[in-house]
Image 1 (cartoon, rainbow, N blue to C red):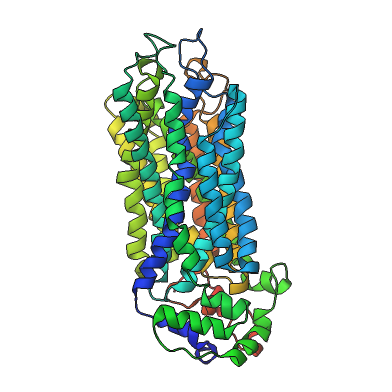
Image 2 (image 1 turned 60 degrees about the horizontal axis):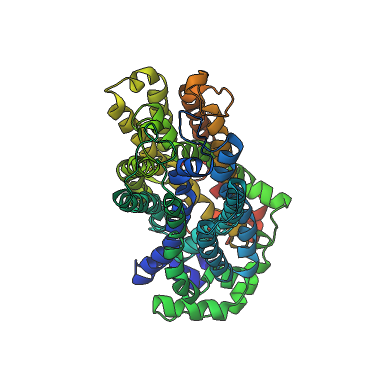
Length: 536
């Protein structure tokens, strides 16, 4: 099998860690930084949007977004992301990774700015415009998932490939953190400049007209990091695996990688023709051969990502509701609008700093020694344990003096999500499928994840509502309460742990070894040996 490997691909597999690896991580990672900032910053400003656009002077509590509006504002970007993952994943295999990469970035920049400029004469008009632009923002973000993962996996060497892809994904943690810090800085600046009374003292005066600029500034600043990396994305050469194995241009692949690796590489056009003519390199996505070779793997990557994102996005988007429920954030009526943004941002930044960001980098450090399978299994297990640790003694955590313990446990669920399935579900689909279907299959897996995020975003919003009408958000029907919602999320994690056994271990293997693209013709009648799901 090694004899069948193209020299250009072998050179990438055995290359020592070089400057171009770090350049690729930064270029791809800044896209993920922007993705996370844009997707999660909305949760920082939804309560402010409620106060500004749904103020009711007769109410004893500040205005809140009606249930359908809150669900749309929180979830519409995920609908766009899901669509974008499927579309740009497929397009990345048809046109090439590089061509499509620039499109997604420009869409993100334009729609980030447009989201902050949402206009309308009525509350409904502003929210509708915001949702329109956030859908297309999500569409661009969706393309970044399969393309960033595929590009990084195809550039990396096989020894440290997991760490490189994980490092790209880890920029998501910094994006979440940056969103919180930006919200703190912007709200603190406005708070110092506009001294407003609390809602209980003066309902109308508690939300100054200038507060409308806060959410717009926070959303628009998401365009900055993406715009800064556009030039460098366009300068990256197409990956050698796409150029050689899909476009079948051995000369271009050798020329591009000779520049990148700074070594002489032979062009092997004849060998490329032979490789791409093999049955192992000719079946399509909907063929029986694909189902036989990779069907179980695709089921594994889609189900685990779907189940993980139900819990992960429920936790992330509704931290503010959970923190309010346990009393870590004061009651809305005791704050003015700007103070509330500041308190929510501070709480979410603390969780990101202590739980979210470290988890990503633990994955970077250990993935190529522990392996993908072990980390994913461990992550799902501890997420289940900590969710149950929050849910079973929930009444203990909500009593005065125990809030810090709740926040610590909650932080651990984030730590093991990121030092666990949130990272591995992103990495594995970029390693185990053939080059001509890699971006498509990653897009399908990621889209399944976003379907889970949509379930989390829409479902948790309703499910977490209390059965007690006095504790329920205005306009919502009775839910199962935060405690029972946490039990549901724990069950989701447990099922994810079971489905992890369908996902193969790719540690230390080349991409062609995992996908079976180098297999001899006579071997194709029997199942590929790389379908083993558990490392031995």
